[in-house]
Amino acid sequence: WEIIYGGDGHIWTTERKGIISRINPVTKTKTVVLNIVSSVYQNSESGLLGMVLHPNFSTTPEVFIAYTYGTFSNLKEKLVKYTFDGTSLVSPVIILDNIVGNTTHNGSRIIILADNTLLFSTGDAQNTAFPQDINELNGKLLRINLDGSIPSDNPVAGNPVYSYGHRNVQGLLLHPNGKIYMSEHGASTDDEFQIAEMGKNYGWPNVEGFCNSSSEQTFCAANDVKEPLIVWTPTIAPSDLVFYENPAFPEFHNKILMSVLKNKKIIALTMNTDGTSVLSQTDYLTNQFGRLRDLCIGAEKEIYIATNGASWSNTSPNTHSIIVIRPPNSAVGIGENVSNDFTVYPNPFENEFTVDFPENLVGNEFSLIDMMGRTILSSTITEQSTTVDAGELKKGIYTISVTMKNGNRLSKKLIK
Image 1 (cartoon, rainbow, N blue to C red):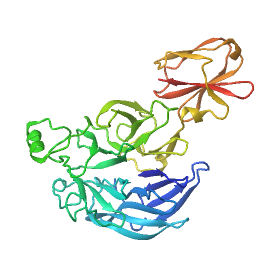
Image 2: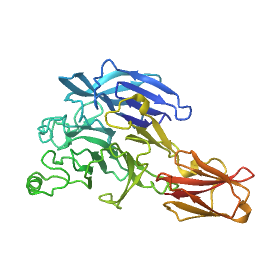
Image 3: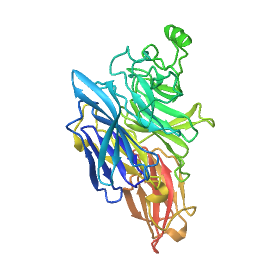
Image 4: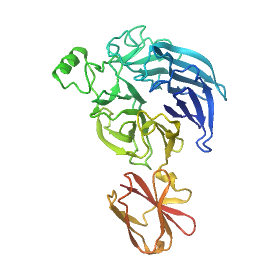
């Protein structure tokens, strides 16, 4: 459900059945650090879900997790803090529990804010009476201190509710601009991308998406409902959000990346200068790796993506994997130079592209490499101009790499 690139150089993962592991991204060795399968109730979308590491993990090795427990007829959700002793997660402390759970709509995304308070999303647990009730914990963003106490500046004294009127928030991002962004699942319409603000009402179940029907407009005016930045109808099932910075990867640089489940893609969102509106959205990796659940960014700006099977009902562990996309400046290797020595056009292309090589490159090898670092085609340069039929290639970002006889490489990025 969750993947986090920790400050310890490992990828931390949660599995819904009740397993937390650390994965070495170099050796790909997976080490289980917590097994609470016997304590977790897992069915459909319930189970061990969200996780966050303490922002000062090297000195405060604490891990916060959310999971469902109990029985089908009395399902609950809790937030628990563990301490990492270098080998295992130990000394559990319940931070918040007795939240109504369900087999779906449990929210569970967790982030820690700059003031060391924790923000935790809860779904409506399939009960539409909860989100508008300020005294219920469901259908909310909850804000608590890391010891489980309630911050004194929350909207309602003694109440953990930060915002309300949510259906099922599954993406939370604290952006460098200080804003909190969230992605939320709609019913059959109006999946939403929003800015989370303290004390705001987001309308569910009385409002879906924008306040654009007469009944919604009446409710929005009476309840000061905050509208989303953008919506998707039909729904796409948005999940995790991350902010990406890397000038060597301009397609993603300074953009919010959102993983998408139902429509099986990554969406790159370009924001305006003050982060209050979406200027554009571009799709990548559509239908290439199935449902995309979660994202994290590695130390070398590589992007890790947790896949979630081919369909909503597909729970086979063999269909779930973590894939990695390496930036163009790390995809080819040592000795690579971004080349002005050859040209590629049209770029972006649709069905074919042409590469014009200078005479001194004839006789060297050139390759077309996809975002996963896989070689799609390879050939010796025999002519100064080469046209490649690439109509069968999937949409995405590719690298043309020329291997010089001295072992160095030249590269240029290509987009379909």
